[in-house]
Image 1: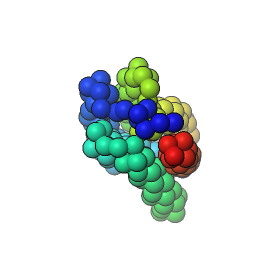
Image 2: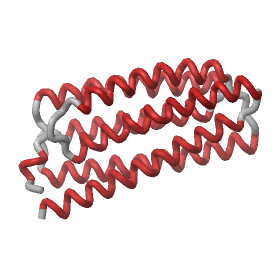
Image 3: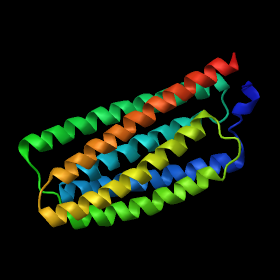
Image 4: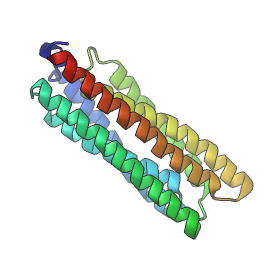
Length: 199
């Protein structure tokens, strides 16, 4: 693939990234606050995920007018951040398993539904863009992973309400981490493939 195909500096792409960035910052705050109040590992995991996504979008915006090699480096940072985030989520889930937690199922469901709607909007915006480069594909991966995670949280919230136990919340928190690991590996592989094609 030629360097020319890495064009990422159009007004539409920049505007889309800004919108997705703002939405992810809002989601990170919403999930983080609700997760702390609801004592939910899954919600906190999604909040951290959205925060890492937002940081990646900032990096991608900086990369807009840079050369292809710079953009691939930004994608590698994106993938690495996802893997770091996943490790943190697994540690938090393990801590909650050992010391116990009392997640609020209704809060989990409500916040996850809001998150699913917002991530659906992000996916729709990103899918409309033509000729996505490695950073746009990473952004799309993030939004899709978050959308899937939101569905898992809804299910976990229902089971928490039904059983009164915390294990569904911990399972989904760990699953969010697993999805992040998969996404991080895919992004790193994509960046490596782009680097080979650009030679």
